[in-house]
Length: 306
Image (spheres, helix red, strand yellow):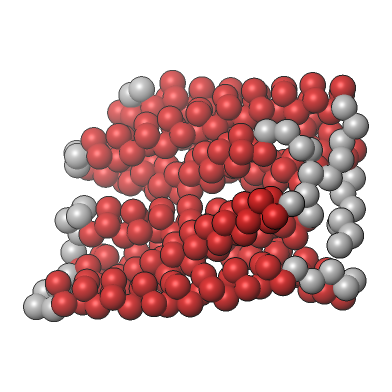
């Protein structure tokens, strides 16, 4: 099988850009952190201060997309730190997800605090999100320094096939998205919201949480079509996903049946409102986890045969 060509110079450009923007993003986040120390004072200041906080958050969101692209490109280009890259990618995706809640809490505070309503829960959620942001920025900065040093002292080569990279990234993203989706649903249910309000969360949770997986899956699909036209067919990926899909279908049925029986007499229970996202996230989690498991098991078998 031929390797899909990548441009190592492109990685160096991404690394240099990311180094600049990670420093800028960290400074913007520090500005926001100082502003968050006293929300009452922040809301009493001229409106421009609140606008700066909102713009900073938007810029951080855009730069995090750049950082995630850089990590994915690095995984496809260099041989070292593959599992480190996967770990930092995981932290980056969690940080990216938490930005949605971060921005939502800021909006709630701006509306509720002037009316004298309690906002401690929103403030705590913002600081939890800030922890993930800072953790990602610091680890990503160290990661970039190591990649930059490696690229200056070694000739960059393809560490593995692009299709194999996308396959792993797709299913890792699937596990993360599904896990976060299930966590979000349980969190929303136990927040004490009214049934009408809960219904408004179903579609946004489903779309926002699944979006990263759908984007990566689309990239894997189109790359697979291109590889197929070039005569490069990875039958192992195909068989692993078929077996994982079969496993997900078998396992999800008793899980959903148990939840249905458990809340049969509760019309406003978790299943009655969130049954669709629960089913989608459950099957996605099992499917992606099994795909990774079968891939890893097959890799060990091939190495043993060799």
